[in-house]
Length: 317
Ligand SMILES: [Zn+2]
Image (cartoon, rainbow, N blue to C red; front, side):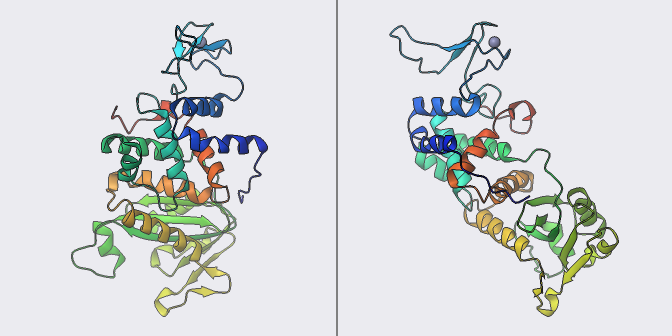
């Protein structure tokens, strides 16, 4: 399932257009239109291909970049039916934020988007939230092969530090990370670190034929009965971090990046919003074999058709 994609010449041409699309509104509109419709723009209302760009009296393209459909006579723009809909934020700023969010390893803050675009902080936050929403994987495949599982506690430090996972769990959000070696990562928020919660999330995301690797936490006990490839553990308590190919380095690497991003770039992320940030880090990890330009295109393309299912960010700018 390792994602290595060949760069097509067509993609290269599109990628070369990204810097311009980040600074010029008309270039941004053309760029996004090409991404969305290719050579055959279609009416998002009725699907008709008989559409045309609306021109001003002087024959120039209208600055609101509207199209009109001969079929249903309705007007539309490239925003209709995407995460860009219902926002008047200039398209070039969307392109810029997509590019930064797709290529900055630890993420990009709303403050940085504000500084670079001149948008308000609120608009910058709105834009990044919608990009994270676009990055969410839809119907991902089950992880398989060698799968590492570990959990991490995210959030403010507990008042009385205690190394017990149960104590930490009370004040922090808990994320279980599952990663297929050489493949995708799947971080999931769970309520607690009991065997029941951990096993439920592992079952939902990992194929039964897999070989599962964890540390020696008691919540993972019994996994060998459920996974045909077996269950291997490393004993962190005795400073054992690898035994042959048995280790959890890949998932720990992902968590390290997540922590550096959440602490360094985003400072604090509430439990309520954490799933969106996880989607962003997951997207970058799962598309890590792509070039920066290809990854940006993948994110922009994932913005299509997301509008209809978008429920949890009602703020309109
Ligand atoms: Zn139409």
